[in-house]
Length: 88
Length: 364
Ligand code: FES
Image 1 (spheres, protein in one colour):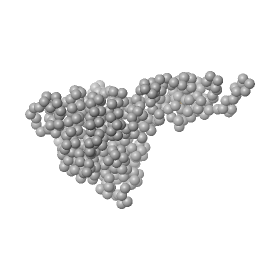
Image 2 (cartoon, rainbow over the protein chains, first blue to last red; image 1 turned 180 degrees about the vertical axis):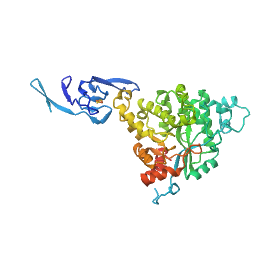
Image 3 (cartoon, each protein chain N blue to C red; image 1 turned 60 degrees about the vertical axis):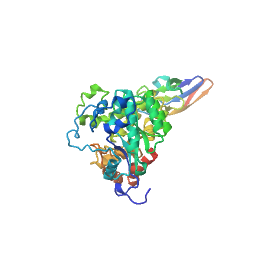
Image 4 (cartoon, rainbow over the protein chains, first blue to last red; image 1 turned 30 degrees about the horizontal axis):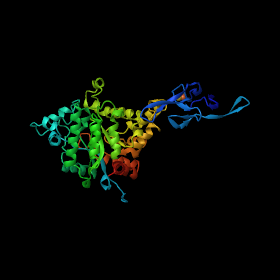
């Protein structure tokens, strides 16, 4: 489960690559081109990296940043009366 | 495309040899050398590769040509090009150099640019003849990217120039560095593909310690062509060269089996190390299949058709261009690969590899 400001996202913990514990990995941003030939750091807080091999996933969609053919399953998150529910 | 069934290479309407070498000698180049080098080098010379060959650093291998066991055939006129075409049943060639395969390692950068320029003058003046199927690649010296770009701009509209030729052997730093961008920009403006070709004697010049172990022609030639291309390709992919330039690249003379290995290995690691190649917007292998082509010679393992067919299938037959490398000592005759492709992958795939794909890549 990840919290992006007011938004909650839930990802499966079993990595689509080789089964590592994705959700125990670091949440961070990522390097990207800055449009002027250099690099910038973007999407702070929106990327989780599986600690086994470092695959980066978009915490919202579960997509592997490097290869959209791989997607970490996501779950619907509902907030009701201050309680957060994950639809399994 | 002809309706007629093609049982042999000679039955094809289009057969493009994407790596047919000329063997330019000192006497061919000197008359085309610009100042100040024309005056600086105006001296009596023999009719041989001559003293200018010492400007082109080489590891100096003992080769079967040196020992007289392989024929060092001369290709210094369009008539001699046609002899090779007749031998191999080809009807179009993309002419590539021999001495200037070593151009990327010439120490004197201005001289390197001048030698490339002289070669192109000679090629245009004496060799190219598109009506007869004789096309050529414009050679540029990576040591002087701005001069290389000007050379490409000058040659882009010449009849018969169908590619830019980057002598990639031993070139340091690797070809993904930003310093080479003017070359790629010019190729993009000219709408020409970029051919990358190493030479045995140059490939390890920038890796002197490694070179100590590769002290034979065989030990160097067999593995290092692919190693050198993997190094340049890795550099170009991590720096986003194919994302930043809308050009095709043609990787030459390294065989085929390393390609499915390299693309899979690179994708495999990219998935975990994407921040090392943040310019890329798709998988490295997708750039390779969209923008990189590979010339076939030397096809390893033609005695084992199962191997060749599966490697070609794994690398993607649409990325493969037939080439002979004639008249160099390890040239491939056109018949061998054709037989395997036709029987294992079908006639359409064979036609594509033997010329139809090249028609598109070179825009003949
Ligand atoms: S198991 Fe998650 S990155 Fe390899």
